[in-house]
Length: 131
Image (tube, rainbow, N blue to C red):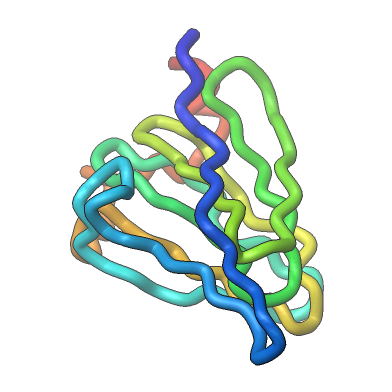
């Protein structure tokens, strides 16, 4: 099975003033339609679905998270704790965001405008794994 997720690395510039991590849209694997931010209350899990249409890139802009992905070949956890390291979650890949540090802010870059509902979301992991 072809992996339906990839780890991406972006430039990370640092000097005595701080850091800068540029995301040039023309260098992303898809044309972004939406950017949103995710935080979590203590112990909460975010995500918990696969998309039929949408692709997303997740970046821990601040703090750290654990991203669980499953492309049909088993759960894998990816630790994100730097703004220049991201995970590209392609279509039909289960994903969950776990273990948010208290200060975690995740930036999500999406290939679609907000597209809720059963035409884009599989929210039952058991059904997802049966396909």
